[in-house]
Amino acid sequence: MIGMYDICCVGHITLDKVITPKSVKYMPGGTSYYFSNAIRNMHLNYLLVTSLGDSEMQTVDALRSLGININAYQSAWSVYFENIYPENLDQRTQRVLHKADPFTTAQIKDVEAKIFHLGPLLADDMSVGFIKDLSLRGRVSLDVQGFLRTVKNKSVELSDWREKKEILESIDILKANDEEMEVVTGCKDIRAGASLLAEWGVKEVVITLGSKGSIIYTDGTFYDIPVFVPHNIADTTGCGDTYMAGYLSQRVLGEKPQQAGEFASAMAALKIETHGPFTGTPDDVFRFMLKKNGEIPVLDKA
Image (cartoon, rainbow, N blue to C red; front, side, top):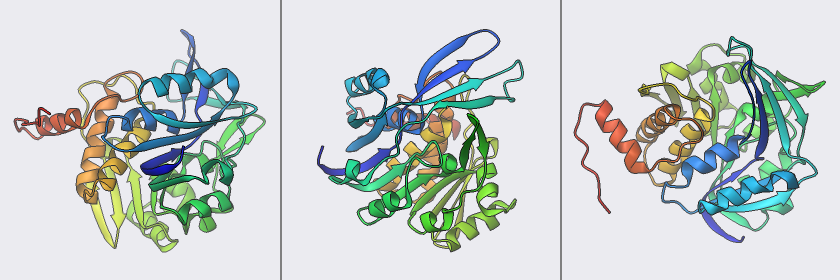
C-alpha cells in the first residue's frame, strides 16, 4: 500500500504461549499488536508493517476487520515466545521458540509517514541500514526493548547492544523504561541517563517509571508526567505500547510533550483496567483524565 501516513508502526506480531500453574494459553502479542489496537481509534491515517508465519495470518485478518491498514509479509516463522509464570508472577521465565525473518528495506520502500514507530522484539529484527533508510523519510520512534533482548539457548537475556550509538543518532523519539535506560546508558539517575541519550543524538527521550509516572526530555527541558492510577489492575501486558500509541498520536496532532505525556499516561491506565489490548477512543481518555482531576467532562458529541 503506497501513501503518506501519520504514523507507521513496524514490528512482528508474535504468537505467545503463556504457562501458569492454572492454565496454558496461546495469544497474539508484540509491540505492533498492542500499538495497532490502541491507536486504531485515534483518528489518524495509520499503517502497520508486519511479518509473520502463515499459520498466524488469521491475526492479520482479525486486525484488518477492525479497520487497521496492514502490509503483512510472510516469514518462515512467527516470533514465538514462551512465557512461564510460577505462583510468584514476578518471576517470569521467557524463551524464544522461533524467530521471524528480519525486516528489509524493500518491505517499506513505498511507505511514507510522518512518524515511523519501530517495535523490534529481538536484537536482530532490524538492521542499521533499515533504520537509517527510514530516518531519511520521516521521524523515527523506537521502543528500545527489543534491541536489548538476546537469545541464548532459547532463553532471553537483557544486555546492551553493539550498534546502539550508530542507531540512536537516527532516532528522533526513544522510549525505554528505567531498567532499560540503565542498561543502555549505565546511569541509574533518570535525568542523567536521558541527558546522555540526547547527547548520542536522540531528539525526544521518553522514560516510563511504572507507578512513578514518566519523564520526557527534549530541547533541554524535562517534563514530569504524573501517573494516572487505574481503578483496578486486570492486565499490564502491552501497557508501554499503549502509552506510546497515546503519546505519538498526540504529538503528530501537534500537542506539546507535557500534554501528550499526560494523555499517554491516562491511556495506559485505562488499558490496565481490562484484559487484552486497549480499544477505547480519545473521548474515553479525556473523560478519564477529567474525572481524575475532579472536573466534569464536556465532550464533543460528534
